[in-house]
Amino acid sequence: MNTKFDDLVRSLEPAALEELRRSVAAELGGRREQTAIQMEHIHPKMTAEAREEAAREIARVLRGEDAHV
Image (cartoon, rainbow, N blue to C red; front, side, top):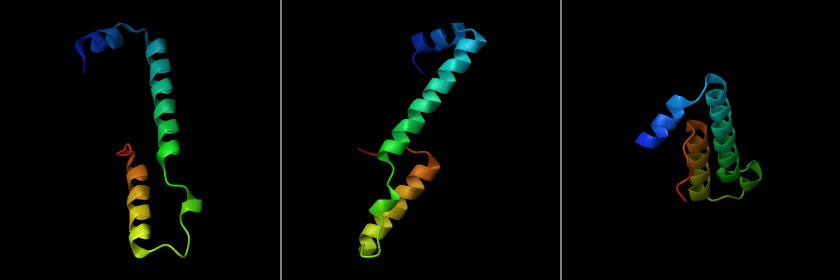
């Protein structure tokens, strides 16, 4: 991490640090929801390739990884 950022985080009071943690977690959760594949994107007429891509996307989201956009 950046040294200035490390110093800032270390200087935070426990309550402020916890609030920062909650804010970051909420932001990450929101980003995952925006980029995650939706169930309505999966349907019976999908090609095998499209189903495989959907399966990879679902696995990526379950692992908590960011999209490669």
